[in-house]
Length: 220
Image 1 (cartoon, rainbow, N blue to C red):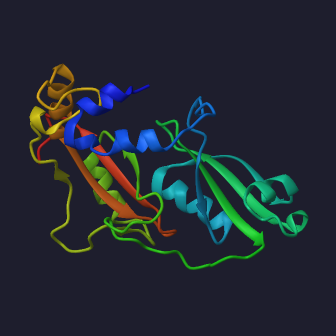
Image 2 (image 1 turned 45 degrees about the vertical axis):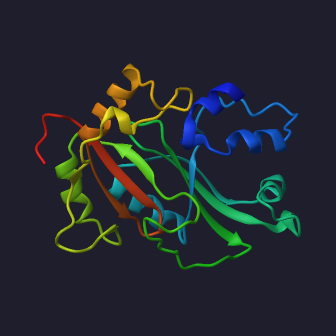
């Protein structure tokens, strides 16, 4: 856990954090995480969504809860009025080669908005994207362009797979180090960032995905 001295030594990057830490007194213990559970996507039709993510990501169906009624689930989801009548269909899919689980949820009752919202990369709202590492970035880019109801983050002809511009160790700052005292971590992180090639796209439900590959032997 970062100490007050460590926060202070990080310079402008952490300016104001010390004052906030002094004002906010948090007495309960923070959560101790044990792993990533899942990412939830709200869909309009569960079978269509399962087929879509199988085509898009090769996501393999694991199990489902068709027309599930569970009062505790709806109460935990914030539906404190009439939770005993809530009904959803849920499907869990595993993305091969990763530890990512997709939870696809179709609400039968109560019914919410049916039209997805599509955000730009710089819009503030919710999770901006999910990143998956791939080993064939150019083939993946060509494939995503063929998947129906899927759009690249920029739909002009100029958009393609891009390599990150070179990052220097001086541009990297760890929260536990002084800005003037770089170490081997800065060199390694700068090297890694400079090797990344990536592209982004939006799926049919408005979720933004990023595919990235770190391979210095790949061309631009």
